Each structure stands twice: as structure tokens, then as C-alpha cells.
Amino acid sequence: MILSMWRRIAFLVVFLSAGAAAGDSQNPSAPIADVLQVMELASGNPMDALWPGFKPSEIPVLVFDGSDTYLFHSQHIPDGFIRVETHPGVSLFKGQHPQVRGNSIIRMGGTWTATSVLSASSRRTGERYGLKDMAGIIVHEQFHILQRTRHPRWRQNDGILLRYPKETAEALFLRRREKEAFQRAVVSEAKTDVAGWAAAALRCRGERLAGLPAPFVKYENELQRTEGLADYIERIARGKDPLDAFNITNGIAPAGIRDLGYVEGRWIAMILDKLRPDWKAAMEKDDTLFLEDILREAVKASTGEARSFEAAEVEAMKAAAETDFSAWQKKKKAEVESYSARPGYRLEIDASARPLSIRIFEPLEIELLDDGGVFHRMIFAAGNETGSLRIADHPCLTWFDDAFRATRLVINGLKQAPEVDEHGKKLILKADGCTIALPFTTFSVKDATYRIAM
Image 1: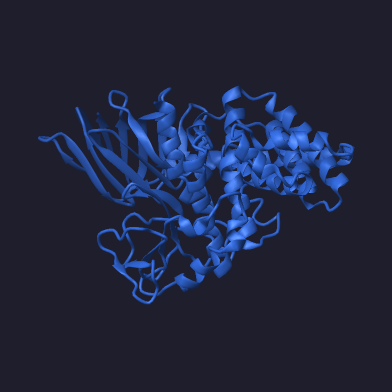
Image 2 (image 1 turned 120 degrees about the vertical axis):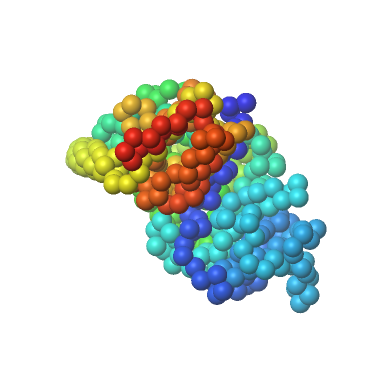
């Protein structure tokens, strides 16, 4: 039951982590782009050829263009939508539909539907988007629906990032060495060089994963197969270079682990295009396979000898990892201390008696603390049968039980005090990006600190 809960969360965080720009400031009255042109680019033979049996023109899509929301490829017209008479098969919802909050997938009327919020650029990288890029991002989400419906096992448990092993300079070095070997493989032209560097990458990866507990190894493999493959589909659809947006984090865990899964999954798929063109059919035939399983067999069948780094290259990577690790430790310490010292109201929530199930978090914007807590920079949402909270664009601190349920939360620097109904025993806050409605059994306030126990 815990695993299924976290797999539900895995898809909820997709729109925040897969190159989406859902949070961009946009003029709601001005369309970002011609949505009909975007959708024309997101269908047809080039898109169908991306994966066996993949037909984007048959997968429903909801697109918010900055002004209105359009529904494509649906056999039904939901409440609130009207037909676009000049374009058969397209329907319109005035304004932004409440279910379209970013690039993700949702259940609408019992049907899996891709969603997209068109944006002129990436919030994370600043890259400018053309119509073809917007189309590729939509196809990325449609591919997730193919994965969800045809290969239900192709999903990762993102919750495991909250308990990832403590970061070290050595672990950072090993990941960077592995990534560099995969990078050299994917940009090589000659098959012998591709296979040789792929062999080196697999060797480096094997050495690194040998020191990780099994659940974390499984997570990385599943992440490559789910998000890495979808990222591959998107980059091919957009006609992007293999090295496009391959370094969006500093590589430090846990954010660097998720980033690595996207990039290495994409690169392994591109390497397999060169070494074993039928690899997609092999995955369709046996969907228990991971990408590295197929790559390992492809490398064994090749004639290229395994490559290796020069000693000076290894030493340079180690030195850079140690420097970056030290800088990150100082930065994290300063960031958390600064947050803890923020002026304003402080809210402490003890949910140990009624833990809160996580609904949304952003894996690329968290830091793990020495006491087992998690510092969330961007967004966190959780709830249970009695109450809920959503914290957006405001940091918070959380702690979890063994079932990955939040048992304690701290929010610092609130500009407005929570509203406390002592008779009804409920705390409410709607300010500073926070929407909180929680019952409590005990309540206290001292100076600017509010404490409740659920």
C-alpha cells in the first residue's frame, strides 16, 4: 500500500521535474503560441515512429495556451467545453481548466489524459521554446500514458529520495565519472568508440551501484526506464542534440540522482539506437528489462574494446567533486540556518498521531538534513482524512515515519499569523503561498511561535 501511494506521488511530481514551466508568469489573456500549430507538430508519422505502437494522435491532450484550454483526441466533450466548429475533434474551455496545472498526466472522466501549459521558455534552464519544442513536451507526457497503460510496472518510487544515503565527495565523484563515460559514448560516431565508452560507463556504474542498498539501485533503474525513456522521446521529437540540458543540477544527491536518471536514460536509449536498433522491440517483448540490461548485451556483442580515463582526468574529476562537495555543504548549512532565522511567525505541526500522506513535492528542490529531516525550497503538499496543507513558493521543513508519512512540519518566516479556532479545534492559514486547514488536539502560542499537535 505504501508503494502504490508513492507511485501515485511519482506522477504528481512529473510536471515540476520534467522540464515543465508550469510556474512561469504569463499574461492569461495572451496565447503563448498557436495551439493548433503545436498539436499539428505533435502528431503524424514522425511522432508515431518514435516507439512501436505509439500513436500520439489517439491519446487525449489538454493544452492551456495562456488564454484558454483546448482538448484534443477525445471521444467525449466534458462539462464546460464547447466544440471548435472550424476544427473537428477539438473542444474549448474558456480560461485555464482547473485540472491543467502543468505538464503531466491526469484521469479525466476515467480516461488518461496528457496535460500541458504552453510556455515560451523553460523555468529551470531559461531555454527558449519554439513550436516544435512545445510539441515535443506534449509528446513526452503522452508517452507517459503509453507507459502507464501498456507497461504499468514502468514507474519509480520517488519517495525513496527522501531517505537517500548521505552524500559524500566520493559518491559525487563516482556519479560524475559514470556520467562522463556515458556522455563520451553518446557523442561518439564510430560504433567501436560508442561501444567502448558504453562499456566503460557500465563498469563505472557497476562500481558505484555496488555500494548502494538494493532499493536505491532499483530506483535508479526504474527512473531511467520511466523518465529517461520519456525524456528520450521528447528530445528526439524536438530534434535536440544529445547534450541538450544535460547538466541542470550540480549532481549532488538527492536532486542529482533524479537528474541523472533522466539524462542517463536518454543517453542509453540513444546509444542503443546506434548499437542495437531493435532495442525498443526487445523492451516491448519483455517489459521487465531495464535499459542497462539491453545495453550490457549490446556491448558484449560489439567489437569495441572498453575505454578508460587517463589518470589525470580521474584526478581532475576527484578534485572538482571535493571542491563542489565542500562548497555545497557550506551553502546548504547557510541556507537552512538563514531559513530558520527568518523573521515572522513560525508554525510547528506535530502530526505523529495522525501522519500526513505526501501529495506533491519537488525532488529537484530538496536537501536532506543530518537529523533525517528534509528542507523543501519550492513546494510541499500533504494531507489525511481530517485535513490538508499545501505550501508553494515558501520553504518548509519536514520529517517522516518509516511509511514516508509526514509526522512533523515547521514553517518559518510567515508574514501572517495562522487563524486558530480553539472551540472547533482547527488551524487555518491562507497566506504566503500556504493553504493549511488542520484539526488539532492541543494548541499553544509563545511569542511568534504557534504549535499544534494533531
